[in-house]
Length: 478
Image 1 (spheres, helix red, strand yellow):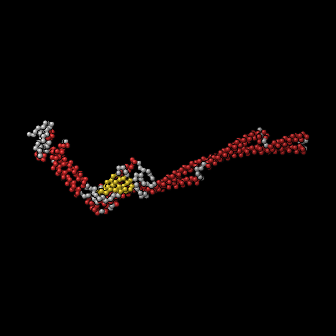
Image 2 (spheres, rainbow, N blue to C red):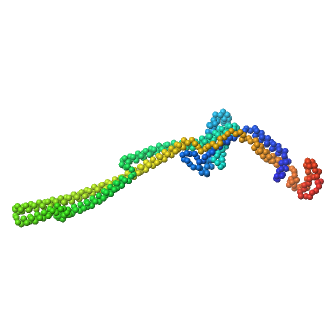
Image 3 (tube, one colour):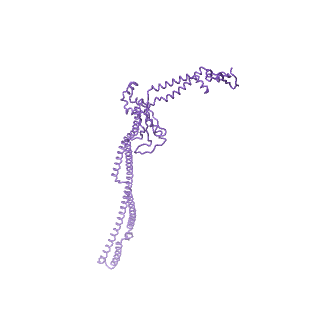
């Protein structure tokens, strides 16, 4: 269908279109005037995505998280929890009119606060700004002042809820940290008690290596003395063995201890001289002669002294060997004791290090939990939030519904569409030839001439006929 043909159809049914458009306009205007007016109040809040925690001092939130954060805040505003706070804030549950509506709707069954919260959410619209951190809240009501009050109540209740969402987890964490701090304090006291008891029992002062170095130096000194004592023991044993061999062979004079003894050498010299003297006296005198007896007595005395000194030298060698062996044994026991003392000291130091490390770990855990618990307790006492009211709602002057001008425009558009549809439908049901093209298209009959309408001729006051032929030469009308 061409546009010119549509225009002709509308013109043919102009009365019907006029009636339809007039009826739609009348109904729209009547409805706009009779329907109860509703007012829309709007408030704006700004959300600081950087946060306002004075303890953590965190930086700005990444851009990819800011949009989801704002979407979360929109859901929080439109939540049932915030609506319940609004019901309590405006004291809606004590409003007689509201109670009457609730009883009529549910016969008193259910929760009045929950029903009121759901009813308020139906009239609330929350939308975030596209390129900023501002969130707009609009509320519709028949009373303009009530709409503004409820809208402001939603903003304030949302700020309260946001603060609770920040503070309540911190309060729960603070209680948990308090319990952990008590447990860690007990663990630290036990670790300190074990460390102190071990220090008192084993005499461990600290993990200083000075004492261990002193004990190691003492072990080295004892080891050096032991080596010297063992050398002296071997020397004394050798001299004792030589002395025994010399005595066994009746050659005590060949012993080293005898050869190096000056007293024995002097006695041996005197003994040799006495023997020579006795031999000379024995050749000259008889046994009973006084000189013979004197020389003999002197010789026997010297021999007795030499034997006594040899016995003394032998005993001295034996004592020296015994002393050397005893000294070596004592030094050996001292070295073993010193070695055991060093091992015990190392063991004590290792055990002390373990207990000290346990105590230090318990102290670090306690200090960390104490610090984190203090920070959490401070967070649980915060009374600030990262949300601020940018614009408070005020009582609107003009209603937001119904809008007469907008409704009239929409009625004109809708009435025109309805009139067009009705005209086209009537034309389809009652098809008429209204133009020369309709005859050509519908019946395939070429139009040779067309007589003007009588009204058109009178209006023009022209007696001539208008001839229109499809590409045919002009002819006079019949």
